[in-house]
Length: 135
Image 1 (cartoon, rainbow, N blue to C red):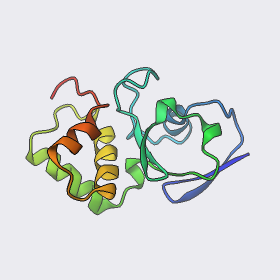
Image 2 (cartoon, rainbow, N blue to C red):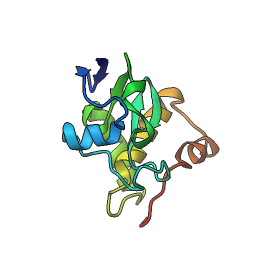
Image 3 (tube, one colour):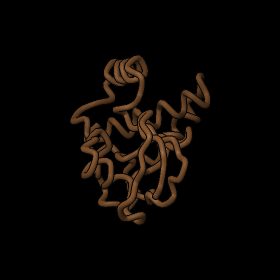
């Protein structure tokens, strides 16, 4: 049994330990903010979640590696965090279709937790793993 916290709730996982976190979140728990943009290749960032305070790709994270982890998806972020980041994206024209937005929001949340006033270069470095095909 693998135990971890997801969005503040205790989870006891007993199924396939090699399943990736993305499929578990979307298919089993119906948490759909994280997206599958690259079929598990770790190339787009659309499935980014927060694991133990770090931005991680859910498509590359196996459940077996999550013992005692604390995980947050955008569904578990405080409302004021989502509202603040989303408004900033909208005000700067950083959204179109929205497919990649949850991954960018997760990455932004983690960046601002670590560094509340990042430089432009630090922002560029943080979002470099993300692809947006329309903006």
